[in-house]
Length: 360
Image (cartoon, rainbow, N blue to C red; front, side, top):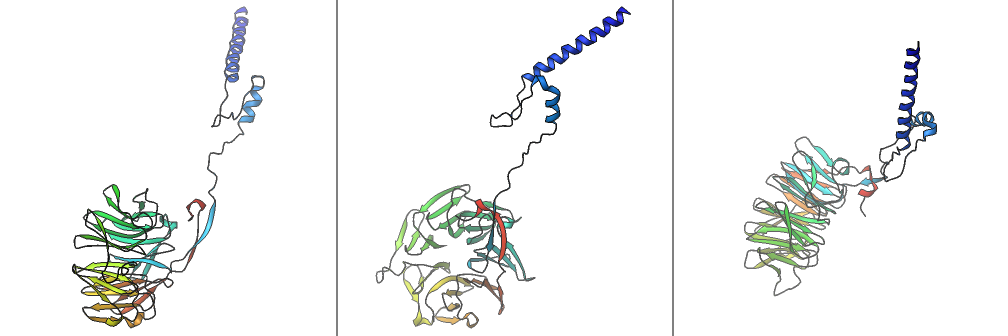
């Protein structure tokens, strides 16, 4: 009997000792919720109550919802066009869209599906995918549709893109001309308002809006002038190089340089509208888009206006042997294939995007 009493007393002592240890450990425990602020304190005199109240406490670790804003994306104002894999590609104020003439389908790429800046200002198809210039820099859309920044440090409006020998040249609004070689980039020509780039004849040609025409031989950039008219190249809207000739679109007409002398196509040669806004090529024919009279085909001394484009404003052009694509400031793009003309002008879309992603 005494043994049982001693055994029970021992259990009581052991239990009291255990409770004392727990009480001490609880008194010294002060968990925190982060940033050094205590989230709760358990008092030793009310251990049971503290545990009960704590079981109902919840910590919300989710981020606050991002502030959103509704933006209307308009695809009708087109600033650049290109052709890749038989498809017409347009860059607009609302994003980029791709038209497939095989099934007449149109795919829109905007801020909803990966484009980080919806105002597309330059396009260039490449083996790596398609380079996309925007108001906030240069991006690459690969064959899988993934869009990534190419030069994160270059946060400016990209206006022209060219590539040769694996090196990419980027014309910008405010940062001059930049060269991307591998993962490294360098500034080449410090000139403002670049409108177009052309590579040919061992030179890189740079057209600007108000700052003149430049040639760069890899060592030095030279501003080009005419002895007869020093202002002839002040505004160059577009450049093209083909068949060992440079073609430069200006408000006075299209200048052609054969490496030794310059010649001008203007009203005397059959241009009803001399303000050339875009230049492209179709075989041996030069295509010249204008500000108010569609576009022309020029072969040697024969200038032919395309009557179906009469009265249209051409902002940009791209072409190959079977297709001509040009953009407009308010009617999307027009595609001509084998004499058939198609207009693609997607309806505006309203989308919600985070406020921080809006244009400043």
